[in-house]
Image (cartoon, rainbow, N blue to C red; front, side, top):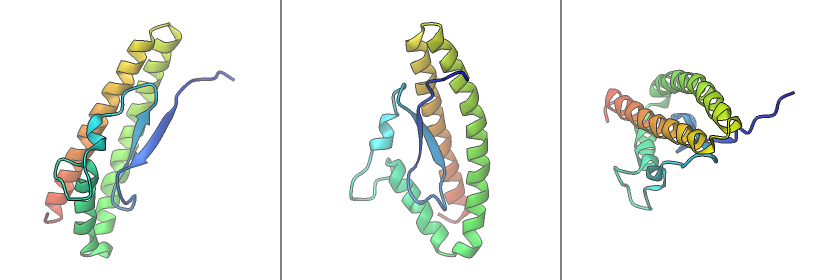
Length: 130
């Protein structure tokens, strides 16, 4: 069996019931914006944005929870498909001695993933009346 070096942690920035998991790769640079936020609500903080979405869903979890979950399930499925391709690309680069190219591919994918995640969260929040 061939061994690969795909090391990823899939993380959720809040309640997994109303959010999605994002891949973070040790071989790349995790987007700095994931570290934004503190104890006070901050619109620039991905965690606080997801907290806002949780509050919106919690108004009527029976009604809004399944809507959010369906959206995030589709998002995660698409993300997992894209991750497989990016990971294969990064592994090929690493095996070819192009470690910086592998890291760049993983970093770019994490950036795109966070952008898509935040856009999806904002759209969902608008749909739920936020």
